[in-house]
Image (tube, rainbow, N blue to C red; front, top):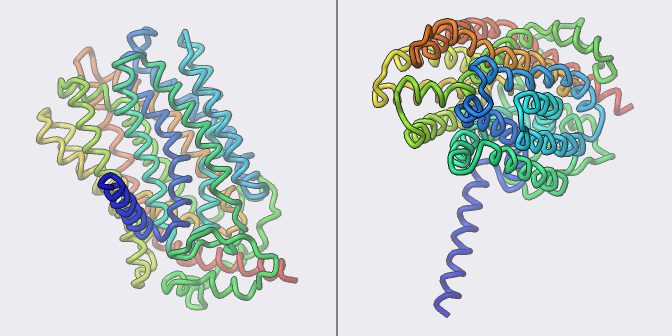
Length: 494
């Protein structure tokens, strides 16, 4: 009887905690979407985090240099960039959930090959296959977010979903490093392959394909995801499209759309789509800024463990604690960045989604500098914590802003364009960091990586200026995208 009573209390407690977490995200249905899509992003960064965690073992066992280690990360990003454009077209035209599940299965096969590699060449080829598989994640996830979350809630939703990137990278660095220390560098890759297959099944069973253009937005507090309604009235879409005070202001007559860009966009060819997207001033600025941010993250992920061991002379346990603390700061940054930006938007700050990232990039670069110069862990840790929090806060509003200024029928292609440039930056970053570190180190332990990080902070600082410039074009580009969506819906309603 006592055990039964305790079991009932435990179930009620779990139920209460579950509802509390769901209320933070926006209800059970939104929580399900967030968990699934965040897990997809987590899988990608868990792999790159694992690569950084086992870097010391890989360099020792395969007898490779910093630059060769960087090439392992670079090659998968380069292949992903090449595959991303056709995937973006598919994301705008086929069932996105099935497309994503299929690529995750390929992903699992590539990670299995990584874990079984017996030479550097074998490992390098497995990373080539992995790069082709991860190409689908960015365009498909962005398109699904646009069709599942209302415009004024997207930065908050992005914050929760992007937390998957950080959790995945953290688990890869921490768990992957511990498993590699206990067993071998092969086991973390094999475990990720198993997790990938499980995720593919969960994705197909738990996430239905939403309708495009706002018919499947998940309301706050909903228990399930709305299914497409063939009798949906396009006039209702015109009203819901502009929900939220600030989005409504931007899409209203007070901000004029750019007339030459108001056209049906769904049937544009790939090259016509690229020309159209690159003609949007805000998109050009945001894509460059986002890619520079991921460039820095890619180098940081690859060499963070080696840097901490060499510069601060700390062992694996201390490295794990340092990564955990910084990861918590970054996680807080993505959650707060999205939530606070959407609150500002609701209160009338119409350019909040570009102003916040501009301030965040500048602040993060300035916080990293004194931390890199200090060799005392207790002095550097709070600086890194603050820098990681501020830097991570830039991503959710930046990603939501890109959806704001692109017509809904092009979300997949727009994200594929951004992902191509992001992957190109990530492909260059690890090798560039490694070459700069090798060139500046001159045999001094840790100095080369410290100087490489300092050099790579310069473009991050320039990002602040770049995003600030987008404040001028953002309102008109939002109005233009809204006008395109209304035109497309009227044509579908005929």
